[in-house]
Image (cartoon, rainbow, N blue to C red):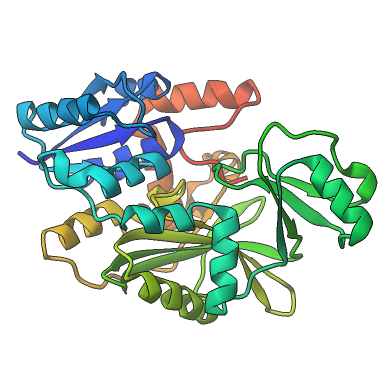
Length: 356
């Protein structure tokens, strides 16, 4: 029996990792903090192990506990699920006493997971990136604006937070806030057009699999953009990158692109890639075991959960991927019911994805 252990510092991405892992392991255990507790109710979680430590500030006693759990439960593979757990394995993976999913070295994680450092790296490597500035406070930004007027619209965001937290579009100087609850502040020129995402599974700087898509208000659609692949390949080769890496990109109506930020980790829509036939957990584990091969997916298009539910009475209008997506949601009733309740209360949906 093959058994995986997911390190979980929360719910949203972690649930996707759990579902993808359940597709290739007989049992999936979760070592999670309190905020990840809901995962114990998933039918795909064989066992939830409470974690009292801090994944971002690992102590020797924490590593000893992870090592003990891996031995007691006969863990075949330890999986990260976010930036913190990816960096934990990058820095301390050789101390946990079990095989772990491919990850980059900790210095690479630190560079790519910081929006300011990533923007500078893009400039150095010749990747297209919007004009980017860094300020310690809003007062610094306002003083600088008086000396050198900023072009609006622009985007304000934190340097190292995920999930869109703290990101604000500012269209005029009057909209600049007095204060923000994070520092430093990354100020970036707004790129008009559509938002694209591109993710890659890599081995020693070589791309072994890829999945790119665009999201609209009504659907998620797989795409192929060779120019994005070419730019991404230069960065991946530069770091001799191992593991999963993704990029958020904006494409203007005239076709010009700009790299906005980097995600050196698993991502929110990885379950959609799995439904298209590209399970990044499975492929990464095969790479670790020396069995990885290049993979391709079928072209995929999935409407948002709200649109899909509107077609439940007309299933012939659903494509193959959409039918698989609905089965994916229905197979985990406890999480799906909780997600539906959260949606009714105006909060994010967990199961089935937030495609809006």
